[in-house]
Length: 611
Picture 1 (cartoon, helix red, strand yellow):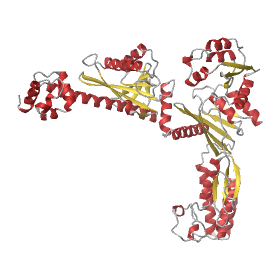
Picture 2 (cartoon, rainbow, N blue to C red):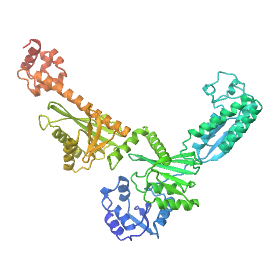
Picture 3 (cartoon, rainbow, N blue to C red):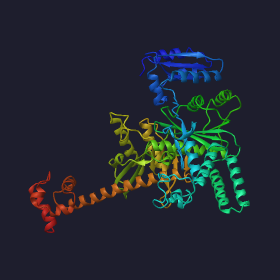
C-alpha cells in the first residue's frame, strides 16, 4: 500500500470544489495519469479513500502516486478539452492511449497487356500505376474485390497472353465471376474496355457509373447488339446487388461513425464503423489496456480518436456517458459545424450499433482464439442477472443421493463460457446421514470456502484459491437461502442464484432472493445456463453412482467374519474390483495392509468354497 496515502488524501481534501484537471505523478516526477473533474476535491479525494472500492487498475495507479498537481478551469468543457490536450502531449501510462498506426493503401494497376487491379499497402512495382493513397485499407480491398467481381476481371495467378488455353477455366468462370480470359477468346479491346469501366467505378461516383453503363446498354440495344447489351445489363445488376448487400440501414446520405465496446477479463476492444453517403467506407478496431469499468472510457476515446480522424455529421455510440454533451460540443468546434453524438434506442441506428458491437466481440474473440458468441453471452448473462462484473469464472453445485444414502456433491467450473474440467471437484457429505439437500449444500460450500482460506495464493487463476464471479446451484430458493448463510458467515460478496427445472427436469428459469428471472427469451443465455445445469447434474450423479457401487462392494466384503469397513476399503483399494479379490491367492491377499494370513484364508474360502 502507498505510504503517502494519508498525505495525498489530506492534500486532496484541501482542493476547491471547482472544475479542473488533476495530474498524478510518480516518485520520479513522471506523469502517470491525467483526469478531469467538475469538482476537483470530490473526485481526487476518492482515489485516496477506501481502496476496496477501486478496480485493480486504479489501485495499481494509486500505489504509484507520489504527488499530484492540478489546473483550475472555468468550466467542465474547458477541463475536458485541456485533459485531452495534456493526455496527447504526455501519454501517461494509466490513461487510455491510442496510437495512429493506420498506414496508407493503394489501388495497383499492373502493366499491360491484360492489366490487373489489386489492393496493396505500398508501391512495390515501378512499372505499375497506382491510385491513392487511401487511409482505409478495408475500403480499398472491399472496393477492388467488388470491381473485379462486377466487371468479371481475372483474379488468378495466370499470366496473359502466355497462359492462353493452358488448362481449363477455374470456378470463377463457371459462376460468372470471370470473363474467361484464359480461354483465349476475349479480345484485347473488350478486356481493356472492362478494365476502364472498373477503374471508373473505383475512381468515381457509383451513380454516375450506373448511368454510363445504362447509356451504353441502350446504345447496344438500339443497334441490335443484344449480346453486348446483355453484358452491360449484367454489370448494372451486379452493382445494384452489391449496393443492396451493403449494410446501408439509412438512406439519409449523411456521414456517420458508429462506436461499440466489447470487453472480457482484462481485454477491451472498441470497434469503429465509418459510413460515407450511406456506404460503409472504413472499419477499425482498437485493443486497449484501459480498465473496462472506467467511466470516462468513451469520452476519452472519442476525444483522442477525432484528434486523428475527420469528424462526421453524426456519431452513434452503444452506451451513454457522463460528458456526452461536452464531447459533442468539442467535436462540433473541430468540425466547424454541427455534430450529433447519440445513443440509438430503436430503428436503423440501433441496428448499426448492434452490428458494430458484433464486430467488436468477434475481433476480441479472435485475439483470444475464441468465438465472439462465447464472450458476448457472458455480457448478456451479466445484464440479465444485474451482476457487478462479467461472470468469467462460474462455479455450479448439485447434490446427489439414493434415498438419503451416499450423499455426495459435484462442483463444475465454467471459465469464459467453457467447461474447465481440471477444476471440477467432488464432495462426499460427512456431517450427517439421511436426506437433507439444504444441509448437504451448506456443508459442501462451507468446506469449499474453508479451502479458500487455507490457500496461500489468493490470486490463483483457478481452483480453490480463486473465488468465483458467480455461483449457480442446481435447485430453487431453498438451496439459495442455505448457501447464502454460508456466504454471510465467510463475509463473501459473491452473486448467488439457483437454476430451476420444469416438470421434465429441463432448465426453466434462474431464481434469487427476488423471485424467478426468466431466461428463455434470450437463447444464448438459456443455452449456457442449461449446459451448466446439465453438466453439474451429470457430474454429481456419476460420482454418486461410483460411490454407491463401491459401498455395495464394501458391504459384501463386510459379510466375511473379521472384515470391517476399513479392511474392506483397503482390499478394494489394493485389488480395485471384487473379481480380482475372488481370484487372488492367500499369499496375495496377505499383502494387503491389515490382512493377516488367517483373514486371508477366510476371504479365500468365502469366495472359493462358498462359506
